[in-house]
Image (tube, rainbow, N blue to C red; front, side):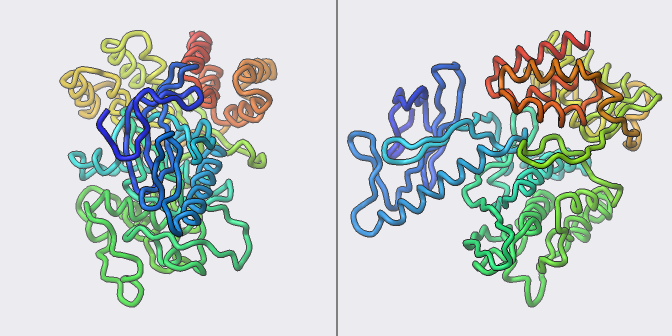
Length: 475
């Protein structure tokens, strides 16, 4: 691998992890591509090694540089391990997953899922401007993940384009929780100042600022503004006396975006924290014009208190409802599945069904599953076929509609739920009961129930085996 200062050599072993190459290097450490030798699984291994005040010795251990660096090194190490603990407590498909963290070589390490894809700034270049539908398909899963963070009592505090990664299947992942902090609820709680110019709200410029969910939503609104305009917002501190930043409603006018969508963006970017949306659910409702929550939550922290959950159900018209609560025409979903099978074979039903849970429309579904098609020409033709409106018309071809609700007991017998709990408990233990209960509130049938709960299984091979049960149930 290319030589990087202070990097561990290729083949170096840390517990069961073998270093393969350097993925990236920053001011506070290095990230390696590594292999878990027990599971034969690629992982991202993040090492705390701040180059300004630490260096590696000949025996691979990390030491503070001479002088006053020791205190800074220890403070940073504690922060690094805090980030690992924070991330390890979250379970959501759009939050980077920490599988393990430990100390070795007199420093800290974090083992994360290896995400193949591109940073958002690299991904969006040729795709800008995104149509509103594609915009929503990208930001709503991230908002779901952010809601999980907030309901766990944490703030991210450093949301910006560089901290969002796009997987190869087109799904986004929120990264870098190094600035995340837990809110104690005290009125006088002090939080360290964290500033990413253009994305940090004014309250993050000083330790006495009143930070909350509205602070992360300011940054999130800034990311959306950047996605829309190609320019980051004016720094919050420069907007206090006279706001010189052009409004999203003005910039996006006449470009195919709804007034409500643009107004929601401007609402999140209000300089005064009291004038912003106070929760993710407030912001999501605004993005869709006040028509209720934009996307039903897919995952919540397993430690959260139980709360009544409403789910969507296909109406008698034959529509197919995913986790967004949007009804897609079942015939058109089947047509996407059939076309995809010509390219990738019998796995197409599982791929299509998973993507349909998140899709807001048939074109969005086709775009999501097209990433499985290896040939670029065939992939583009596949997307074109469905984006052009070909195929039968139906509920999924027009405006999305919401389906009525059913209770868990109306959909699943106690025997089905007990079997799902028993099957999942083999992989994740006693917490399976909570996971199944929450998934049952969202799932439409037994097959989808198994697909949902499979997200909690970390090992890809085991997850794939588990998903086969969903396929067999469906048949």
